[in-house]
Image (cartoon, rainbow, N blue to C red; front, side, top):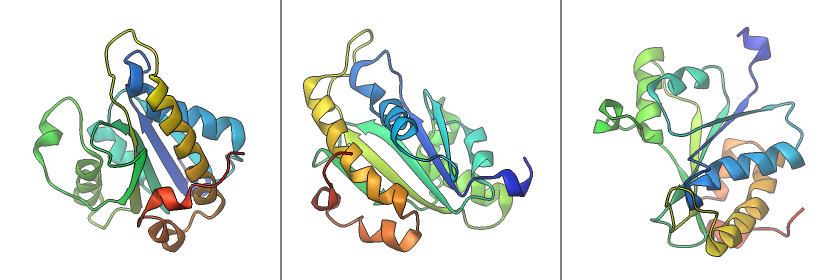
Length: 172
């Protein structure tokens, strides 16, 4: 893709929509597609992160990973990512930090500023719907994401890393 065609913000949403709360990442991306101008945003969804996703980060200004997580303290967590060489590259699914490390290794430069929005989920059984708790957490993440997408700058996003739930604004 020519550099002029690369959108500055890349959002990866990953998870399996057939596994209950694992659908949170793809569902947030659907919300973004329906409610925001995508002129400067590229949306990608997949069941899981793969090594080739590192190539999609080339030329980006910001990257956001969105996933369901059982480890959230609140309805969602928002964290800055750094490249980490872990063992996930040798499995069928990679961590966001490992994808950043692959990018850094391939490109021989630091990856774009990258963040992870983890949305709390608890029920991941095959063939189940999104749980009521996950639906409520998704609504909170939807309120949080709006300001990030209207101000896609590393400094603004970094300001939201501390206590992200404090910054959730009313729904669109």
